[in-house]
Amino acid sequence: MGFASLTNLWTLIFPLTVIAYYLFRKRFEPKLISSTLFWNENRREDSVSPFIRNLQRNALFYLQFLALLLFVWMLLGPYTKQDFTEGIPLVFVVDSSATMLATPTDESLFETHQKAIEEMLSSTEGRPVTIIITGKEPEVIVQNSEIGSALDAIDNLTVRYEQTHMDVAIELVKSMYNDKGAEVHIFTDALDRTAIAYEGTNMSWNVHTNEKKIENHSIIRFGASRKANELTAIVKLKHDTENVQSGTLQLKEAETEKVLQEQTFKGEPGSEELVSFHAIKTNANALQVELLTNDDYVADNTSFALLEKESVTVIVDDSMHELLKKAVQAIQEDALIGTREEFDVPNALQITGSESELTKGDRPVFLIGRDKEKSVEAKGEVTVTDDPLFSIGAPTEMYVEKIYPAFEGFDVIARLGEKPLIQRSPRGDIIFLADLESTDWPLQPTFPLFVWSLVKSLTMESNSLGVFTPLQRKSVILMGMADIYDLSGTFVDTSESPNTLRAPMKPGIYKATDDMTEKLFAVQLDPTERNVSVSDSYSTGNLTAVDVEKQQKVPMIWPVLILLVMMLLLEWEVQRRRGYPY
Image (tube, rainbow, N blue to C red):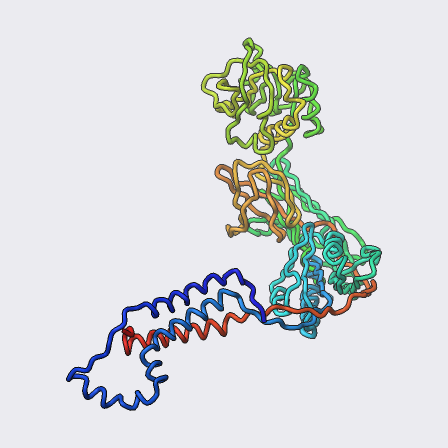
């Protein structure tokens, strides 16, 4: 037996204080008076045993002293040492990608793997268990845990639809158990032996795969475009089957699930097939295509498409700074260099130095400098407001030599000292009140980030944020933190920041809603998740680790705590019956 907190020995002062109190308390001399004559007669038998008499008179003192000693004992942290055998670590790497929903038997691969892991855990004792879920960022569900906790964790696992990234999970296992060794079990549909090529000699790898081929029809491409008041959609199918299996494709509005058209497909084994939909009349912003047939993998039988408007052309004046031209062309490859008059492109975004462009067209422009005013010298630090344009990169380290007078009535979103530097007009035009040549901004890393943010915000006519894969992170432009909802209005998540959004795990159409806007985005299966592989299970590696005899400290708190509570109850009862001893 030992003590974990010998530093708490100072608490012995409390029972010593109680002893001192009883030693130096005021004592009374017993005297006989007429009212106690009969008491002495009744208690004559007590005088025969001085010990019992002393115990009766000082019971409260003894109980208090014992309770304090038990309390000090608890503070010292008593424990006993117990020998136990620590088994070889048992590691489970579980594939949670969409392909685990395939059903080669009466149950999905994921359910089969769950049952196999539970059977292994039920027949295992005294071994630390670690469970890792695959993904771009593998998650350790439990680490070196007991069997009971691991069984609970396995019951709560769900498919996450994300691409496997098995190589990342394998590297994580190697980094965790390279020294002490482990028995690793990987549950997936297929894994090449080269993926776990391992030079060490202290780990065993057991790969559990899907050994039965499935019948699968998958949607590998789906796109739609709007022309005038009609839509055209094309679907590309792949038939990974052994026999001919025809079926039906339904084109629906994603939000209402209203069926717009139906087409049949042939389903020739091992072939790819194109199915077209024409003359579709709908005002929907998103479409859904669903494949109706009998196969063993339904996750790839649905696909989604966002209906985008035609992209906006960007025109940069030829007189603009060369680094500005290159930045815009890097963002939008079809950007034009010249003036609006040179190109017959209606509704284009103009990046110019001419103030006259502020009154032309309906689209806001990006004005750099003022050709009708003279610049003046200015000094000071650049400060910006909490504007979405600066959510990715704010030009706070920029040096500016000269600036132009500000426009009256325009909002100021950045200042140089006390003077306006960047303004926004009521129409949405962005005005940079300096020539780029009089600043060092084009040489700073915040410059292309600002240009990207500005071009995206001024050309964004679509109500969508694009297409994501499950749990994918992307840079987006929002006015603030956004809440994510599915089309039924159920809350799903909140964006990580105004310019970063992480997609939900389940494929579908979602809405990102900030304080001012609501934008749609689609979550699609990764192309690698549209095919379920078949492979033989195998084992490899050489596990040389052995069970280790160890000692563990078992606290002795609860027995002492129970005794302490009993002492306190007895003390209360003695005090209730007899009062304080005098």
